[in-house]
Image 1 (cartoon, rainbow, N blue to C red):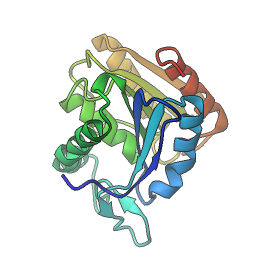
Image 2: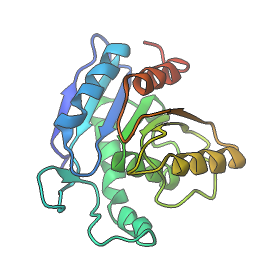
Image 3: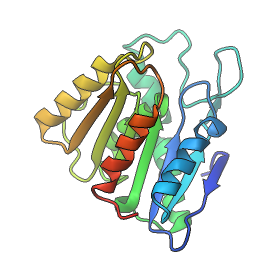
Image 4: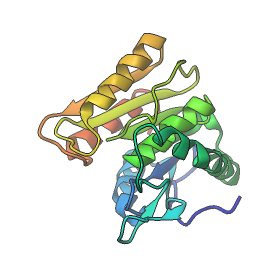
Length: 212
């Protein structure tokens, strides 16, 4: 496939991990580049690829999107995600092939709509990545089975008015009931954003299984 535009932050030394970062709706790769830099600093052996959404944002100003929110209802969300999931999965696989990093050592990092894409990709292709860091996101529809080869870390502000934290709690509860390996960390008085504490917590979660 033709890969989207991206910012590549190379590993320092031998590359052992691949982090693929997907931004939220109306944003772009530049918006999420600081997160990529922070993760690369914490895990120097990780290549961090901050990718642009597939489509121009259709909400009236600049930026990109993974799928359109225009006139979308909750019932329509799963179908809109499903239409672009094959391309998202193909992008992940193409990047793994490019850098010679296997799925077990791949981490999908999403914010908002990028988290939706990452979570839904694992529903379709368990083990596409070894871990997910999902900031301020949700499922398009809750899963019916637990991923066996992917660990999911959810991080969310409790004052989020865009994607309420209750949706993350519902996702965590469903995954736990299915026997998935999942964590949920929240922070009071934080909205739809990645706070310094949530970032620190995400690094700690990854640090439990990845070597810096």
